[in-house]
Structure formats: C-alpha cells, structure tokens
Amino acid sequence: MKKVLLGLLGVLLAVGAQAKLNIVVTTPDLAAIAKEVGGDKVEITTLARPTEDPHFVDAKPSFVVKLNRADALVEGGAELEIGWLPPLLAGARNDKIQSGQPGRILCNEGVPMLEVPSQLTRAEGDIHPLGNPHFVIDPVNAKTVAAHLADAFAKIDAGNAETYRANAQKFTVALDAKLAEWTAKLAPFKGAKLVSYHKSWPYFAERFGLDMDIFLEPKPGIPPSPAHLATVMAKMKEQNARVVIVDPYLNRKTAETVARSTGAKVVAVTQFPGGVKGTEGGYIALMDYLVNSLAGALGGAPASGTAR
Ligand SMILES: [Zn+2]
Image (cartoon, rainbow, N blue to C red; front, side):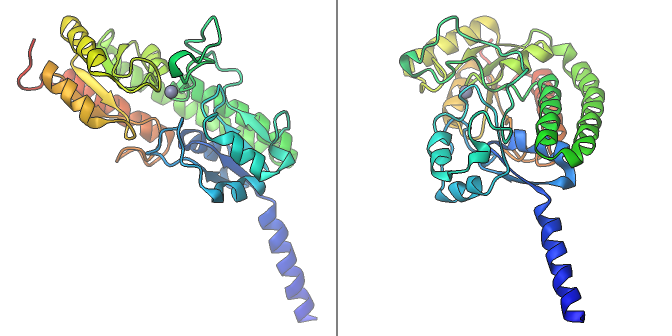
C-alpha cells in the first residue's frame, strides 16, 4: 500500500512538474520580461546569450531539441531572428510553435515600429527590412510586450490566466515608477548627441530625447569602411558628439579608434540583461545601468585630448 501511495505521489509530482509551461525565448531581453509575466508557472529557456548579436546567434544543435519540447516560442519578430531561427524551427518538428499557432508568440505585435521602409528592400545587405526590430529597449514597448505575453500565455494555459495578467500588471506598475526616474535623470541631456555602432538604439533615443543619427556601420549589418569612418569622425567633430556607445558583440576597437581621434568617450552598453556587468538583475536593472552610465558619460568632463 505504501509503495502504491509513493508511486501515486511520484505520478502527481510529475504531473505538477509538467504543468509548468515550457517556454523557449529567442533573446535575453524578451526572456526577462517573459519571466516577470510567467513567474513560477513557466520554465524559460533562452537561446541567445546576452553577449551575442541577436541577428547572428550561434545556432547550436541542442536548440532543436529545446524547440521540439517547447509549449511556446517567444520571438521578437520583424525579421530579427530570420538569419538563424527558420532552420531550427524546421528541424524541431513541433506543431505547437508553427506560424499561426497560439504557441508562436511574436512580440512586435502592437508595437509601433520605427524606420519602416516605404519599400521592402534588403539592398546592400540591410538587415532591418521590416523596420527596426530593436524595440524592447524602450520601456513603453516593454510594457506592451508584457501585456501581449500575458494574453498569449493565458491562451495556452487558461487556468493561470489571472496570474499572468496580475504579473504583467505588477511589472507595468514597477516600470511606470522607474520610467519617471529614468526620464528625470536623462532630462538634462535632451538633444545630446550619441554615436552608436549598429542602428539598434532609436527607440531608446526617442523615448529619452537623445539624438542618435551617427552610426559606425554605413547600413545595419554592413561593417564600417575607412571612408565611412572618416565621414563619421568629421560629423562627430562638427556636431560635438562626445559619447560612442558599443554593444558587447560589436567591434570595440573601431569604436575606440573613432572616439580617440574625436575626443569622445566609449560607453559599453547592452540591450540584454547580463550583456554588460551590472545588468544581470533583469530588465529594470538593465535600464538602470544604461541610464546611469549614459548620464555619467554625458554629464562628466570631456575626455582628455578632446579636439573640440
Ligand atoms: Zn539590428
């Protein structure tokens, strides 16, 4: 009898464990929000590492297994993952996460996209043909994503719908409070010029009134040529751009060379919790780091040897 009871207990535990939704998420920023919304009702697996370029993720064979077992796949959409996700999905043979299924969750739904071209083109290798896919870095968009994830999780797991909605609401309230703080911190730098390597920061710039229209890449995904960099440096001097931001997976050396010859500073940034030291705590910790390090760089004394 005892044995039977133990056996029954084992079955119940197994059922309990299976009751957690198994969610695979493409990038760590979306994973952080999915964790906020899913809480203890979901198991999150993130594919991209926080130091990896989300356009060019190293697609390991183990990803196919993870996708095969997933109840849902959360992705950014707008072709952010088009360079690496489709073959993995084909290999995973999981009907639950095929296009159009409730388990296929696209986070750009409901997000006002920036830089949508009037004509679809991948001319000269542009990797943002459907508009800029780096939208999660605007906290207002993060709220939209949280609400969307709550609805999507509720569709797959109706029993926990209330929990998902309550979690998303809690995250939204926390973000609203922080957004006021971040906006106040960056307010003194309204209109300040920031130079970035890849065009992944327009949503952040627009939200906080920063001016980012100088890029080390001539087009998203195209490595900088010496001629392009010369133009960049001339523009930086002319427009008094004093800060160059660079993500962990991009060429920091190029950024440093440009900064050195223009008297600018390089600031290590990331859009992914864990991408830079001090951002591991989640979405809010990441934003805290960005706001504080940019306010520090923009407010501090100009770098030595400035050519202004
Ligand atoms: Zn991009």
